[in-house]
Structure formats: structure tokens, C-alpha cells
Amino acid sequence: MEQLKDISSLAGFPLAVNLIDGMLLLSNDVTSDPPGLRTFEEMRPLFADVATNGPSVLYHLYRSVRRDRDTQALERAGLRYDITVTMPGTVNGEYIKTAGHYHSRGPAGITYPEVYEVLHGQAAFLLQKADNPELLSPQIEEVWLVVCKAGEKIVIPPDCGHVTINIGTEPLVVSDLITLNSRNVYISFQELRGAAYYLLQDQSKPEDFRLIKNPNYTNALPTPRLLSSSRWHPFLPERQPLYTLFLTSPNIFDFLDTPA
Image (cartoon, rainbow, N blue to C red; front, side):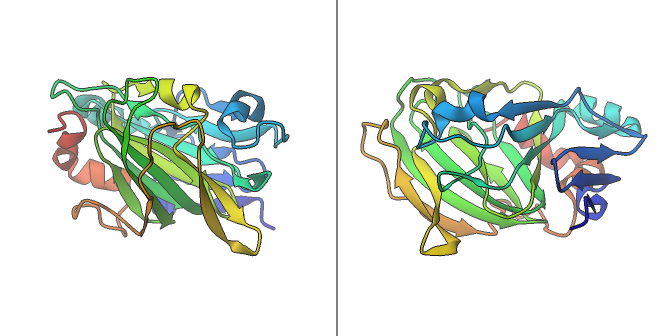
């Protein structure tokens, strides 16, 4: 298997991912904040089976990724472009995932939205709309599982918690665009040991998956809706990278900082 995968055409700038360890290779004119990572021990309480061991590193975090010449454009818009690389595999049948979070509230009283784009691999985004994301145990009003492949985008609506899940066999590379005013709210995900549902591989059909309820959510849970290739906004063309779309039409992303 090749070790480096060039994903520049989907990213909109020179970028490659190491298919073995999930690390990104940035060109000399592309910078980011110091990379971070999440270990299995940090994430253990968020899996359905806390007694099972998993791989040491679950995902890598690259914040404020940008070409040097684009720094001012992002700053003027008050936005940040991030990349997360989630490793493949399962923990006792449950797909490797990110911790999950909500966003903080904006001036309009609702939480900030976000745009995601898959740059490599196969993703499932678990979204759950809550009545009050700041509660320890919010009422979950709707749940969606959105399956996306490389090149597809999705908007995370206000008041929606979300988890990124790698359902493929290679590292999942996902970029996102979000306002600098937003902060991540983890409180209920930590209190309730993850999202409202866990996504597991179907043992009878390894290419398929199944959802099981998180028993720590004591309120009634809605039945998840399964969606695919959902862009949610008509101005998010599949063939134009999110990064390039921002540079050519920054104003269409004003809603990220002023949700209504």
C-alpha cells in the first residue's frame, strides 16, 4: 500500500496524508497551529464498551490550516479552517470516532453552525439536535446519520451536536470552516458517555453498520434518519474545494458568524 496519498485536488492547496499513521504533510507555504491528537485513553469513556482496549491514537487535529498568503482573508472573515484525521478501525465493533461536541451560542441565541468537507475516506456524521446544548442531559429532538464520501460537504445546523465517524478502511480526512467566535461545548457528551447513538459494524455484513442507543440518555430518543451525500445548502458544490470556495466567495459564509 502506498504510504502517502496526495489529496491536493480536493483540499484546494498542496496536501498529502500518511495512510499509515494519519499525519498530514503540509507544503512549505501551508501552516497550522501545532498539531494535536486524541488518545484512546482520553476517549475510552465515550465508547459503548469501556472495558475493551483500542489503538493508542484515534485522531489527529490540525487547527487554523492556511496558506500563508490566505491568512489575512481568513482573519478578515473571522473564520478558521481546520482538518481532523480520524484513524480507521473499531473498538469492539464500534467505529473509531471523534469525541463529539456542540458549539457555543451566538448573539442570536442559537449555537454557531459549521461546514464540513470530506477530503479522503468515508465518513458518517452523527448529528443530534438538542433543546438546550448547555444542559448536562438535554432533550434530543432529532438525530441524523449522514454518510459522505470524499468531495462531499455538509452543514452542521445550529443547536446540533455532532460526531465524525470513520466507516472506511483508511484514515478519514475531514476539513471544516467555523467562526473564531465559536467554542466547543463537550459537557453533555462527557456526562452521557458520547452521542445518543453508537455506530457499530454489522458483524453479519462487515460492509454495513448498525446504530444502538446510548443507555445513558434517559429521555426518549427519536429514531435516526439516514441521509447520504447531503450538502444541506445549494451553494456547496461537490467539485469545488471548501477552501477554494471560501477564497472566491467569502461572503457566502457570513452565516457561520451570524446564524439566524
